[in-house]
Length: 524
Image 1 (spheres, helix red, strand yellow):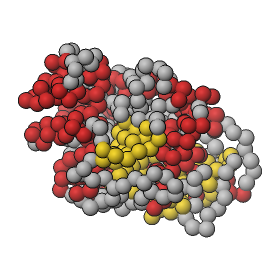
Image 2 (tube, helix red, strand yellow; image 1 turned 45 degrees about the vertical axis):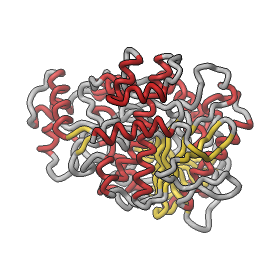
Image 3 (cartoon, one colour; image 1 turned 60 degrees about the horizontal axis):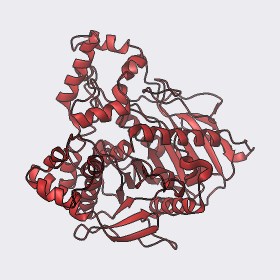
Image 4 (cartoon, one colour; image 1 turned 90 degrees about the vertical axis):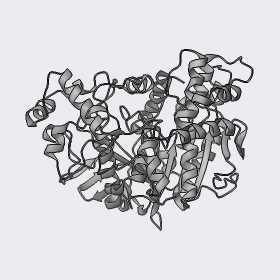
């Protein structure tokens, strides 16, 4: 599925979210809460109460552009929390603002005798796009968890390391402002979630694509330690568990791309005057040419978008590549769910099949025998399989392997379910990148709307139940669901969320992923 196809899907999610947001309000005593910064008025719909657009940090505008989030000032009276806040600045036609650091909470309307587990969602979008409107949390909250989502800065406003910033902020991390926003939101959860019935000791962070990569970043960051007890990584990238698949930027490289971008705008130098000029630019200017499509295309061609560094090894929040941290056991020692889709995203390019298999170096012939044994596959199909395995599928297995070796309970999955209404469409040969989300969030109608079937709902109910159970007990198993054993790095069985149901068994892609593993290990 193309980036444009993924955007269409996310539009469906946004429409579904808007429909949920305008549900009739019911008066209830539990739709008002008090947090550190003041009182909030939420909205009850059915069995769930939502609080949207809650500021968790001061607006990062003016002199606070490219600064780590600052504390939110308390307000007087009762703040209306019934509508989403604007998205952070990015390409695309959607409500957005540089003043965007808000989060949302969905919680069961019926009080619980004991604090509930908390699930904190981090959206994807290549760290260039994304917003919380697209991901309603009411269906998971109805399963007796507290669901939280946050906006965070993206693109050049979220990941930018101009040398003048280093001189200005010598006592704090510089460059990874989007990650620092996420970190501030996780701290907010620790300080405030009890007001919504949540347990700050039972926080699970989860996300997809760059959101899954963000989860990975928090797993290895010393600044995030102790803020969560479980991690779910759905097709994690930017970064991935393979250092050269979707890598982090060294600080020196991030500084250079920031300087080059500034120079392209006629702003030279690395002093305070240059920074003042950059902060005077309209936020809209900083999003030009930096959509998720642009960023991913640049990663595929090896010609990154000017001024877009992506995640940075800044020496404070991120000290090293995830692969190095995992090899040394320096990650958060928490239970993990990780996996990818059977038609996932692949980054790279190849004009011919020879070019494609040349990616394997000395193993080109072996790769051809595995991926195209009859020589009849089209180039487009081969590129989909080879590049997805390289970018996301094998790195997800590698992460699972490393977690098990570190003694952390880990479950590895693959998602291949296709909505029944789409199965006759030749474009839908499996689950494209991001299309597991309607099932893990239990909102399958967001994808096919009124064509959703009982089988689609059954898969969503099942997949989301594993996720909720993991957040509740640190183990996805329970009830009458098919048993999901721990990952075994010596056997490589996988649970598959497939059209015929959920099955656990030998991985049909094992030999392909083994070859990629050999490739990565020989490059070290």
